[in-house]
Image (cartoon, rainbow, N blue to C red):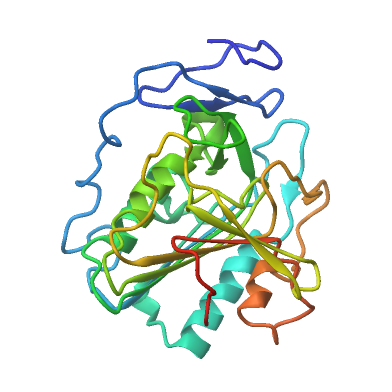
Length: 298
């Protein structure tokens, strides 16, 4: 198939719903019938763990993903802060919120162990592991620090006509992970009493979990306004009784100049600051979305 932007020839991976072009970085929707469920859904992670994923089932679990895209983007640089982001988050979760070390999975593109690399397949496995067997009292965290993209919507469930997506390190080969899949993987399974906090620092990320309600926050954090983002089609995007909250650094359609050509350096993780403001400078969280229209309380 051809890239819709630069007309370069793109390889089509079986089962992929979108492909990212290595020439222009644009994302093209793959016009194929949508499968009834995600490939391998339900069998990616065995109940006892296995591979890199811990076999113990702590009530506090987290998946932290940081991708710099070093050497992966033609004509582009790399992101400066994702690795530092996940390291800061892990430290905060363990030291301040009592998360056990074996309850946290970290995926980055700096890892040499293929089980710990932030590939599309590993991110899918990690999302399944995070919510597998969730129950009352579970506290779950999903963090993604990397690049986000928008893809033309094909099922009419997006108010702006675009799906949002996150880009794994092999996005040029395997395609991005769409918000529809993320919602199905880590939002829908949440049962009553289970809570998910997601923190996403990527472009177009304010609705990347496809949550039904969005809160826009002023730069000073003093004003906010809730918006109803339930799909026009009437499709249900909420949980199975639990609560999901997303903190995002960018609104949909908004980009940020974080690509650099020089080596990466440590920089503050801004969306994290609204949760732990003593880490560094004031927050610049732009949006907060939620599975139910109520004020979030830490």
